Length: 118
Image (cartoon, rainbow, N blue to C red; front, side, top):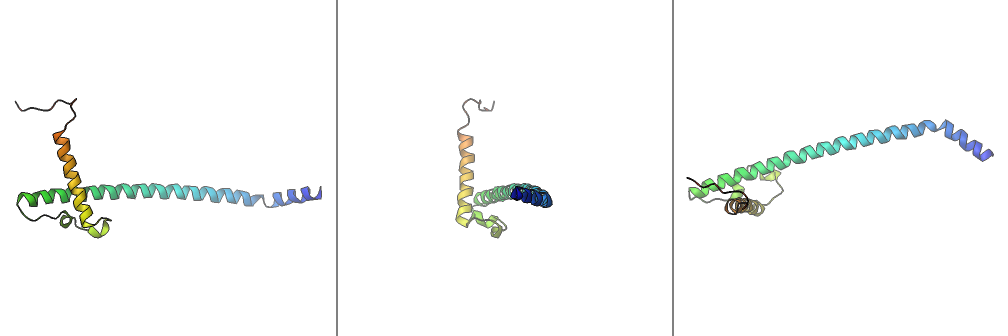
């Protein structure tokens, strides 16, 4: 009986600590959610920036090739230091984009009627 009474007294006197734990947990959870939202935003911005850089490099490389100039795709990306790709990776990605674009043009969805000039 004395043990149960002692536990009850401790529970009553230290009950505020449980409330503090709940408060801290909710603050940590809100901060975590805010950080995750910020990470997702940064990732989306980085992905869009990377896509734009590859698109621009592809177009500039095509222009150089049309002028019969030497064209290395990586030379057309301004800041390689912020990208996690080597020059061969960049060239491979741009070549892949070109091949996909060509394949889409060549092999259109057969359900879609192709436009024929009159």
